[in-house]
Length: 370
Ligand code: SF4
Image 1: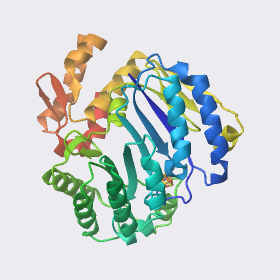
Image 2: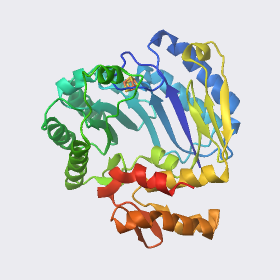
Image 3: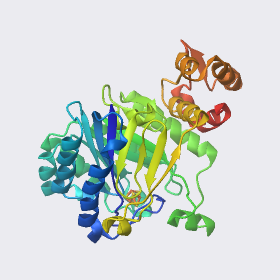
């Protein structure tokens, strides 16, 4: 099985912390969507397995597309791929795009999961992040989706934001839990150089939270969501039983995917390909790509990284059969220090990081890379 991704690189307003590729020229959307249809026709053969398990609209801000444009792309995909086993079709959305009218029209499409970029339920934090919505709008849009019949809703939360005291995160988590959403992605704020936040930091107008504070907040997220019944199944992702994100889980399991749109990435098992056209070039039909072929070391490192970020960890029997027994020995030896320190565990044929130690995952992964 494979997955399909549509990248919608448009944003009406730029968030303080964001360094993703995005553009503000929303007038280009109709031509970009037109080129996406052409790209689908031209590149559907990239996938060796034409059976899809999920479709995902990410960005940028996919909710800037009309529900008709979204359904048009899904309908086109149905003509090119076997979609009989597609269980999940997700759209990322900004709360203020999810008006009553939009939600009503979206419900008529095949989209069955909505992932909302809420980030915080504190208006001061939202303003600092330069988000377009308020806390109240965020709560209202979840209620609107619920009454329209959506039973698979995910929200994004950002923690590790300095300057707003110690209580806002707890209040935000309480609100997220009270809404009863099926899935929560919780990310630590990072300061990227080429962002407004990077500039504020260089000017001394923003000081990132200390490591100690990061740890306190990480543990608060983990404890509160666990107590509320969410399973911590990946470093940044929590789900109610049976509600793990199918599309993202497929990425982490090394499934093939086709990415359509300016900036989108594709993966076919041995090849990785990405579109380097700007949105303007793409809107004019100019599709340019770069690609790379993955070596055995790349494959192994990718497997180590995606596995150790998940609760299941590295399947050592799989490593032995795919990469050889020597790699298993090397991984065990590299992990021993972490195991002795209680940061990693090796049990039942799996090497994994207990969820309470997930915040150390980057260091563990780096030390185990081939
Ligand atoms: S809406 Fe998302 S992609 Fe757009 S600027 Fe904000 S964080 Fe970045």
